[in-house]
Every structure is written in structure tokens, then in C-alpha cells.
Image 1: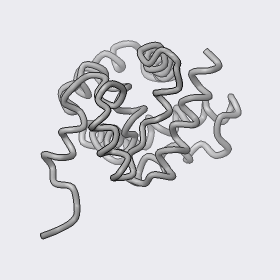
Image 2 (image 1 turned 90 degrees about the horizontal axis):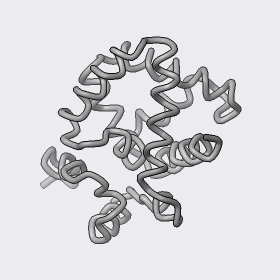
Image 3 (image 1 turned 120 degrees about the vertical axis):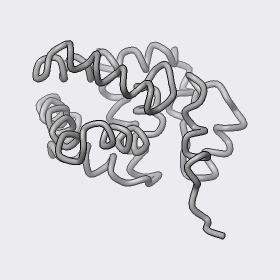
Image 4 (image 1 turned 60 degrees about the horizontal axis):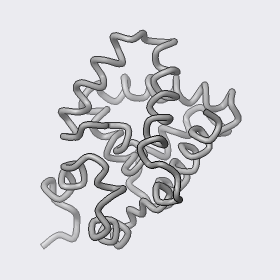
Length: 159
């Protein structure tokens, strides 16, 4: 038997809105699998953090792709992730968000979206290289996830 996580277990992380914030048992289980979501438990209003992340990311994407793009992307990401708020998944499980984005837009389309975001993050001093977001989101790795969550935290702190 393989030690990898099967598809049902992967999708389980996305069944309930705010699951990474409210379900202590799941947080403990996730932490044991390298999926620590403690950044959202810092005493800040969790919904506010997610809302600010969403506002910042959508503001960047709107400049380049327009409001219709955002509406379509959000609609399909909600379905693909089976959640009310895809940006919570972006915060809690960036690799899973990346994989679903890739299913929706393909490798090149996803890279383009993340490069556009990366450009703005470089201008804001949040990251050093525009492709850093792509490189971190591509891997399901605890260290990469923590680095991304640190970027998300800095991004939401400035708004």
C-alpha cells in the first residue's frame, strides 16, 4: 500500500468553508502531514485575512485580465475545490490551489496568471523574483507553504 494521499483524502481538505481555521482535529491531522495552518490562528480575524488576500489578488488580476476573468475563475475554482471561498484554499493549501488552477487554465495559463501576480509582488517588495510564487506553489512542501503563507501575511498586513 502506498503512503501517498489518495484523491478522496486530498479533496477532504476542501469540503467545508473555513476548515483550516475552525477544525482543530483536522488542523492537527494536517500538521502531522506537513500542512500547518497556524498562521491563520494568530488572533486576527480569519475571515478578514482571507478577504484581504482575495481583494489584493483580485486587484492585481483585474488590472491585467478584467472583472469577467475574475468572476469566471472564481466560479470554476469554487466548483473544482468544492468550497465557498477559494482564497482560503490559496492561503491554507497553496499547492492544491495551484493544481486546480492548472486543471482550469493549463500549465501555461496558470504560469501566466502567477507571473502577473509575481510581478506585482516584486514591485511591492514581497518577493525577490517574479517566478518565486510559481516555484513555491508547484511543490507540496511544508517549507514552501510556510514561505507562501508569509507572503500572504505580509500582503494582507499592507492592506
